[in-house]
Amino acid sequence: MELYEPDVAAVPVTTILSALGDEARLEIVRELDRDGERCCGTFDLGLAKATRSHHLKVLREAGVTHTRIEGTSRYVSLRRDELERRYPGLLSAVLATAPTP
Amino acid sequence: MELYEPDVAAVPVTTILSALGDEARLEIVRELDRDGERCCGTFDLGLAKATRSHHLKVLREAGVTHTRIEGTSRYVSLRRDELERRYPGLLSAVLATAPTP
Image 1: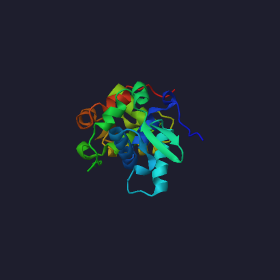
Image 2 (image 1 turned 180 degrees about the vertical axis):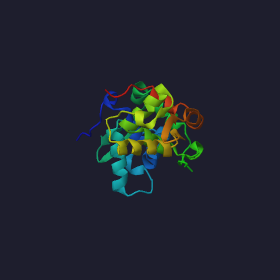
Image 3 (image 1 turned 60 degrees about the vertical axis):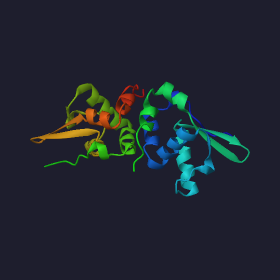
Image 4 (image 1 turned 120 degrees about the vertical axis):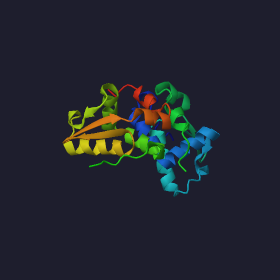
């Protein structure tokens, strides 16, 4: 099984901005930035599983995250280097902001 | 008449990202970055007037733009310095990207 992941070079910046422009998705990105690769089930965002899956799909399809499948588990990580090459300074400017209280 | 404009310090970064994460709105921001203050009616985005007004409202309410009313005209400008103070490097990282062809 393979999951769709775009070439970051082909992703419009608006798609990245729109993917990051949601509190739950930005929290996922902050946790991946802090922890590195995470198993999908370990995000405790107070969301229904289907909602969490939706947000992870939006991030993956926007080129923000990479998903690795191992057995029945999915592991998610940030595509930090690719994003930095395509949109220098963008992800770090976003991550430098404090989470909304 | 006064138009609602938030204190940028109180605007969550996700609101800014979401406002910029749209091709028409980002084009408006690019033109304001290039030209400085513009009269609302001078944006030729191939959009209906109501749609353009909607996008300008989203930008204003996200703290991205300032609207000055003079007689019956509205003039729009980027709140660049305030955005830079609140979210250093964010707007410039976005504007450094080439428009999607």
